[in-house]
Image 1 (cartoon, rainbow, N blue to C red):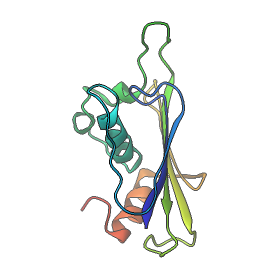
Image 2: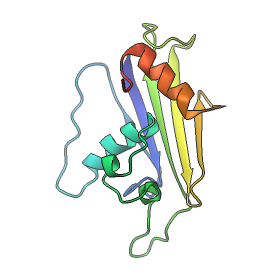
Image 3: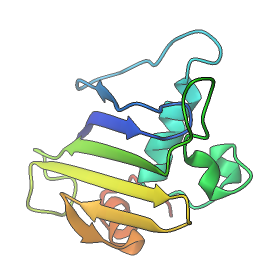
Length: 136
């Protein structure tokens, strides 16, 4: 099992859709200060179910939604998709590729999905904890 790709839209500093592709083994996220490295890590934690705004370096959960910049209006939602290669069957689900997604709207509403099917936060947490990568 390994992280295959991460797509970030409207999450913190990532206003436009950005996809990072990963290969098996070790991956390093590098760049100058302020380039979004920590936001990549926050996006992974968030899509996996992180509920604490302070853990994501924010005051409230809505702070994960892109708040605008010079020449760029604030967005109404944040969305993160994390695709995991599951060819080894480490996740207890009958798919060789599993995509977790989370969307948060500015009104505070939140949606989760597993492979595009609407899910609950609990479903994602249980799927991950059964594999040993979720929270205890």
